[in-house]
Every structure is written in structure tokens, then in C-alpha cells.
Length: 106
Image (cartoon, one colour):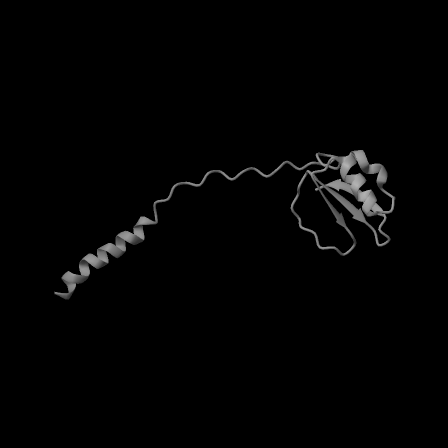
């Protein structure tokens, strides 16, 4: 009698476990954005004459306006930075004296 009562429960559990096995295939992931070399979409080539200048907030606004970059980040020695590549972002690399050493996209 116990077996006849447990049989429907066991069958239900087995069917419930199998129901998750049928899934729809996931769409192909979006391709990564193309890598853009220095100058690319962030407009670094338009402001590369600023290398060697001392960085300041006033220069920050000029760099942003002249390059047309959608985003900008300032990287000082020892700063932790993310490794994501964003071609529309202008990277302003500084030395210890806040002198611009490089301008590139990423």
C-alpha cells in the first residue's frame, strides 16, 4: 500500500527533474567592439599635441571638447584601471608631476 501511494509522487519528481532539460538555445553573444588604435573614435589624434603639457581641470575640459570623446579618464602612476576597452573613451596618462605622457583611446 505504501508503494502505491509513493509511485505517483516518484513519477512526479522524475518528470519535474526532466522538465528543466529542455531549454531554448541562447542567441549568439554580441561580438566584442572592434579594437581601435590610437586616435580612433575617441579623437586622441586631435589632441596629441597636448602630450608634454601639465594636466589641469581647465585642460581637462579642453581635451574633452577638442577630442569629442564620449568619455574620458585620467590615469596617474599606480592607479588601478579596468581592462575593458572602450574605443570612445580618451585615456589621459600622466606621470608623477601631472605631465601628460600619452593620450589614447580605450
